[in-house]
Length: 195
Picture (cartoon, rainbow, N blue to C red):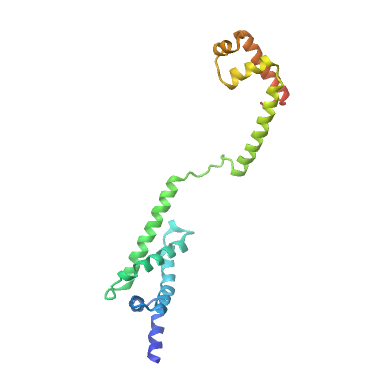
């Protein structure tokens, strides 16, 4: 029994790669205690391996979890006659490279905000202000005399040419110009010269 404890104590040292190999062989035989110990022993090593990659700052724990999940999924492929360390490092490197590639793809698809861009909150406030201004503008347009309102709608809002607006409204080009000018002047006065 003392010999069994000594073997377990020797295997709990993370710097003993032979112990990891022994633990993994026991894991393949269905030993849950050995599996828990193996995961506890390799996790700090994996964490230090991942933190060496500057491109993964802030994602260390996620990458370590990916490695551990992969280790779990492929544990049956480990050959107990071969060293465990290189097998584990190969798995870890693949997961690290996968994460770096994923991060690169995401970074390539994203556009960073420049200082001159508005924040989301400011944009939302602008939308509310725009809606309020639109209502104000609609009310001001409704208050215009019919000829000015029609000239403004045809020329400025629908973007018709003077000739097209004259044909549609029955007004002369000169009358449309005058009505449009007066409509804009009236709107500026009604809206406090903000348009």
